[in-house]
Amino acid sequence: MKINICKKFPKIKKFEKKLSKAFPDASIQVKSCINMCKRCKSQPLAKVDGVKVKAKKVEKLIEKIETL
Image 1 (tube, helix red, strand yellow):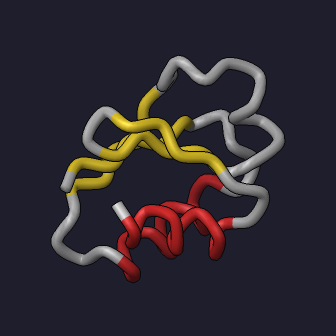
Image 2 (tube, helix red, strand yellow):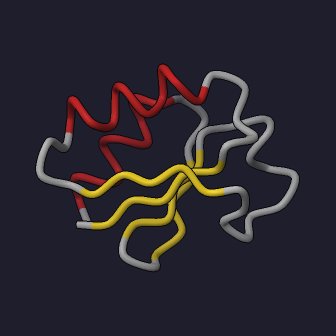
């Protein structure tokens, strides 16, 4: 699984750490842009194998990624 996250998210280090803990086999990359402009500064977003996923909290985002 390939997960891309935007570096503009305020708590990017914690976000990346939680994702790597939840998905140890996934390839997690911090990108400068994942084409979800302006939302990345206010809520956690990820692009999982090309599919855009968003949620209000990191835990909810992880749950959505698990269902993919």
